[in-house]
Image 1 (tube, rainbow, N blue to C red):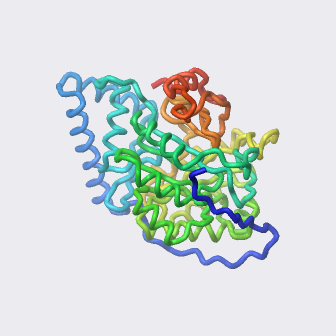
Image 2: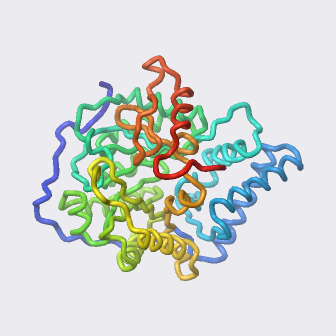
Image 3: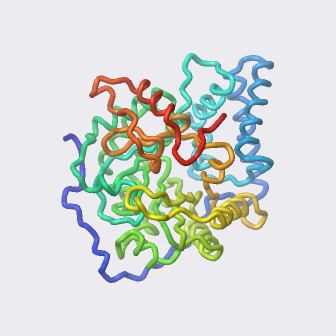
Amino acid sequence: MEATLITDLPFLDAAATEAPVVTPTLPPAVIASRLQRAWATALFYLTDARLLWRFMRSGARMQLAKTHIEELKHAYYGALQVKKVAHVDGRYFREYFAPGMPSPAYDTYIASTVNRLVPFRGDADTLNLVFLAITKKCPLACEHCFEWDALNQKEVLSRADIQDMVAQFQARHVTQIFFSGGEPMLRVNDLVAVVEAARPGTDFWVFTSGFNFTRDNAQRLKRAGFTGVSISLDHHEPAQHNAFRGSPDAYANAVQAAAHAHAAGLVVNLSLCVTQDFTTPANLLAYAALARQLGVTFIQILEPRAVGHYAGQAVDLSHAQVALLEEFYLEMNYGPDYLDWPMVHYYGYHQRRMGCGGAADRFLYVDTDGDLHACPFCQKKSGSALCSSKGGSLDAALASLKTRGCHPFAQASM
């Protein structure tokens, strides 16, 4: 197999002694200045207007597109107005699942959004984002791992497979690809090679526990063309996170990865699985304060699902806990006291109001065998992304996936 993998995988000993961790205080990415936020917001407005004119080419069609875009924004945000903006390495970011501006990826993202509302190009591609699992290998034993049954089995995907899938998704205007696993940093050489070979128009991210995310590797990812890193950090207390991940080094690795990514000019997201025990007002605020100290741009809230390592367990949050998460999401993103804190991405808030955009509507998941699923937590094989090597059709596989939709939520209507 043409793949560069760390072959002597040093599995981590959960019983080892935890070393003390000094959490650094890093410069903020989210803009604190009201004037700078206003400037960035105006820049988004002008860029969107320019792109809209370029796509529509007439005043009447441009007005029609603007009307539909406002309807879409209202369905997603309600009466809320996006206020926060982050600035990282010359680009501005307002949403975790949207590319930064200015960039070819942002232009393509706006084009796909407009095209599904007022068609102006020959295709009907609406897929924006792909989660692409590239390895079964991982040194951790995470409590919630959704790939638990495949973990540390024989690898399937070669570097050529990954390159082929990336090229096919780019041809369908996908503007964000998140590499996951397992632990994708075990294949850092392949990550670098794949992204170096990709064409412009896509923001590339890597999901990691922080394992093997050294200063040198962070800089290699940045030079190759990566936009950001999503670091799994599931508690503000080191011992709690280490227990959740099954390693005494997990917290230190995550914090160190955030520092290395920040120094390299990568956008940093902290990914948090909010368990029943974790979801309290005190824990949420303490976690946000830690994220602020680390200078991260986004916090992603993931609800636990009874799949993978959690299969058969009663892990769903209570209605009161979901309500608490929604209150936290609203306060952190729109409250006047938190305008310079990291932005919170809680897709569950929007899924409950306008449906889910998974299952190849706006995003999908490709597992470590190359098979397509609605999302990482709605796993039911629906064709393969390895169509060129298997003689199938990716378009047919995507169409089949769309008909199945998301399991716990209705399909998005816009």
